[in-house]
Image (cartoon, rainbow, N blue to C red; front, side):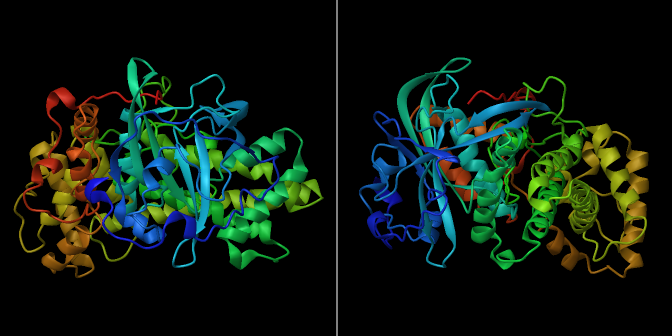
Length: 500
């Protein structure tokens, strides 16, 4: 295990278990033993997260447990059942087809978290698949979940990535891998949909009460707890989508079974950070109709929330009209929350101290210019910090990628006027603020692909390099500037599919 395990807290057998989710009835999950992974190789171990969890990184049992070859002490792994709307179509029976919750523990700070192996073999919900994940998609999820965490975007996280030479058939023959994911809860919208649409309404309250008790404790015992809880879920979801939009992130598979009840980014499949900005960028080449394009994400988030709210009607009131009125009021929170959050975040990216009338139009004009030029999203916003209010010099760094220079220069003139209007003329201070919300480094597809190709040849150094880099996305990191460059032409259009 080399240099991965260098600090120690508690061995696994001594960590405080708190099996609240596993303690729910078997209506919600099924006990499953992981399928052993042959010849496991530790590609990377997230030591920083391990220390946060209180795990002794020198525990010799770790590699076996994190590959699914040994059970977590005193915990029976479970796979959850759920349903969902996939690309808008109702699918009545889904579930953890390749994921298993292997532990629920208390961190040293008292927070309860669940650990889940993704790729640990077949479950009753595998629907004919092998229950494995491949190294390619596992590397992408491992890197992106930690990249999102460092960006400050709510997300599940990853503790470890284990590879195996075991062959796995996807579009081509690939090799297997297992990721250990970590989150306060993996409950998703689709779990409530499953019981509602099956007419098993009695199962809704225990699951909702579990989520409230563990993750919304301030609502426990409140007579209107379900309505207030749903308000928070809808608001969290709206804020999450606003964060995706303003960092140029496309999820790719925004099915309701991939939406977290905690407002976390969940299930990294064919995701992508945009290079060239396109309003209707579609990162998943399996999304033939473009349902989950970049500009559609806010509305899809709201539509998914409407599906969740429908499932909660039986909990909100015995009177159907009253329940419908409550749901309508909660549903309407999404639009206002999203609009306010997105506008505030766009304003922050421009270094504006406050949101004023006309700012939405200023932002829209900039995005239109970037879209028409297919300018690099991340680099463009990072370089806007170079605009000075004490000079009318061209906005270099962004201008080089602009096709309609007249429109862009006119926008910069209005941008400078907007900054001066709020006496925001300390250019150095504003640039520092902007560089704390406009990352220099994101997980571009070509960077992930380079790490994948190296790891397929048993060279894990690029995975480790990207983990270090993406843990500090806002810092300059001298000597690493090539990671911030736009992809070469031949790698601009890498296609990402649902196959994993």
